[in-house]
Image (cartoon, rainbow, N blue to C red; front, side, top):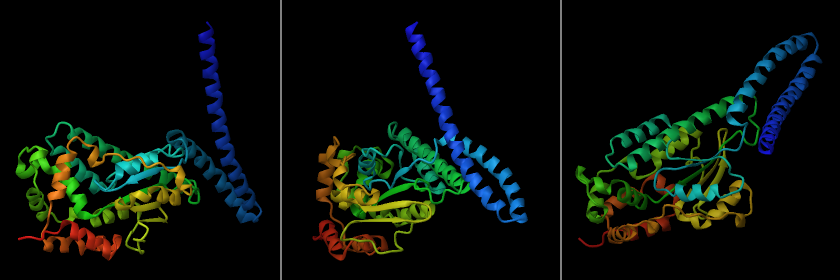
Length: 346
């Protein structure tokens, strides 16, 4: 009997809490409505006509606001780790998710309709029984996140919340040196599909990667991803201003989002970058490394492939002459990348 009474009391308190929340929400909206109504009424006959229009419009606004607030729990801060595959998104997501105030965190590789369609098509073409459902699930998550973004934008427009601190998502994007990114993608995603044959990762050689790399075009560097995804979805043009290569990250804001753009090679300074982005002390940020090559069972094979890889100078010149590389890396850094991967013998 005591348990039933306690349960009923808890349920009643929950109902009271929900009712109080809705009442507070409507009171805030009605106060805004009254202020607008008084201002219009004081402007004379035309203002009084406008006041009548305000009454009708605001009634519908309150109803719409309650429906959206009930579904999305209000305008809460939305944090999105958004980057191309193999650019350190797992570490970024784990580190941002470790912050106390990041209660709503999403991770996505694609949000444009074309990008998600390509991701889904790639998943359907897979034969790997483990990776295929995982990739399909990520495609569904990307579409769902795109829907949330659109709903929030519509709500912010209807409720005139352009200046609300939580109306814009906090977008964190990473980039990476193209050869290292391509090697990681090749080994962990495509190494077993060489020439259409199922091949164990242990049999992948530097020569296999060189042949695969020679056939690639747009996917080797992130320029296309930055234009279609970061630019197409959030209107962020990373090439519109100088990237501080000496620091390794850039914080900015536009009409659609606040953003942090960071190089994977600068992750040693991730606490400083996230501290600047969120306005918090760097010492409060804990770097949580995830999905690292050295933590995998086949890390020895990957290290051997990485250590034995050498590429022709012509291919490296083609890669490192791109706008993407020259924008995010200094001349000295590019020379160091080239020296690391360049084939010196015949």
